[in-house]
View (tube, rainbow, N blue to C red):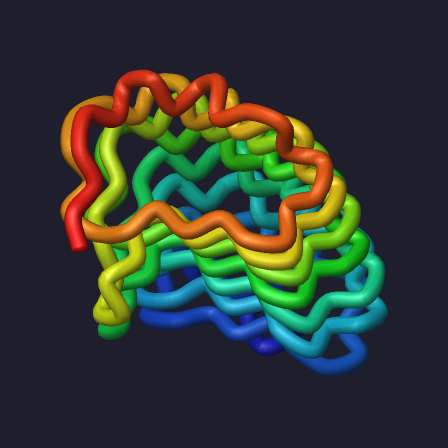
Length: 190
């Protein structure tokens, strides 16, 4: 991160944020990530502020974060591609995450999957209303929600319409009483 500070670099191939980093303000001029935006093992990171200038990324991968409670700071992202495994949004072991509303700028079809696992405090998918279609990953998943025990609503996916080319998988979502919001999905692939 510090290597990019003051460099005037607006575009990078991949960005991996990990370790003891706690401040991303040095990345304020970044606008595009052609490959992955990865935030992993960043246990001290409580905020993604500093990334507001990013407009599009190859894919978003956040895992093993200890303090990150929201995706605020990613509001500028309007387009997300997918990685070689077909994942667009991959949030794994983000136990403090309470909100994905920072992704509210993402609009249109995701070419790959949406995967959220081990997000114990996430109560809704509010902020994903701009997504209109979801592709699949190499495991055959389109929407994969696992160990999201506080999840009460999937209505943030209310604008996803048409057939999913792969699976819709929801398990260990103890508070989820209905699938309201998924009425636009007309078929589910294998």
